Image 1 (cartoon, helix red, strand yellow):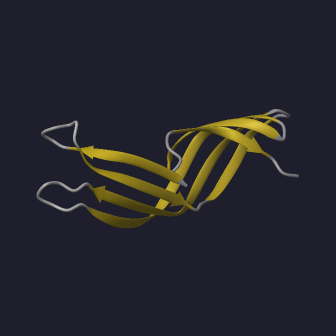
Image 2 (image 1 turned 120 degrees about the vertical axis):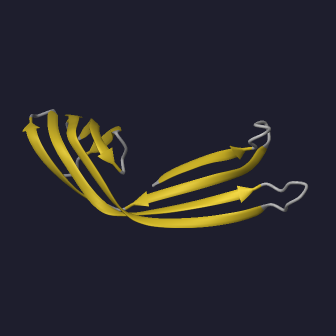
Image 3 (image 1 turned 90 degrees about the vertical axis):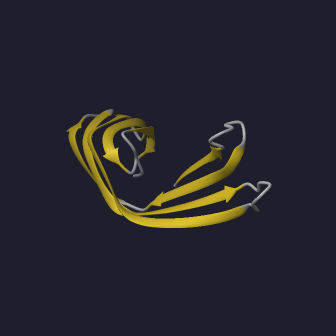
Length: 117
């Protein structure tokens, strides 16, 4: 799940905040990973993932002298894909990984991983 917050500024007076927003994105995906280099403490792989994504955006408009403030909520569902042609993992059961690709994880993805079993 990813979350983003931001604000809208007045076009004529950028110091004035006219509204704020919060966006949440959740993706539930199945991922297939093909490991083409497998060593004791190093793996190189390709990853492909697909699944549904759910986006919710809440916008709060601040009141002005002429209008009352209001809140709007919008939802959007979409099919999402991730393709990472280059991925590497370094470590044993506990390791670090880095992926270069495109899709719901972004262009460059890094993290900590733990293997069960």
